[in-house]
Length: 89
Image (cartoon, rainbow, N blue to C red; front, side, top):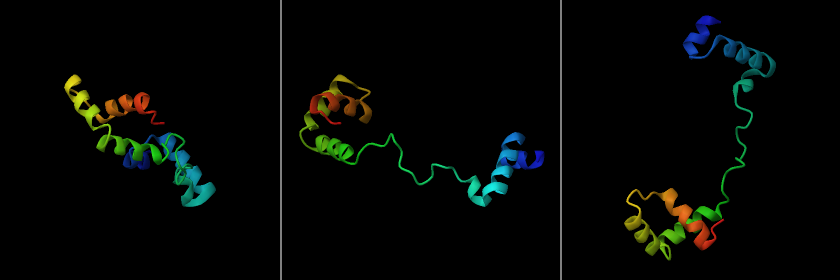
């Protein structure tokens, strides 16, 4: 097991866990249990669409203002700016 751990770049203890998962559930035991599920943290689809609309339309002037006021302007800063002003949430 030590050699397998070295090849996989894992600890020996973790290789024993993987071996136990494979014995119990087959190859599916190695796949993460949350695979295929939607994240609880993912934003609803309407919010990113609304942000893009604002960036292209009525928020365009705000982008120019932000770039002048904040030389290190980032998309994240724009979103933080938009949420309270346009109630994007």
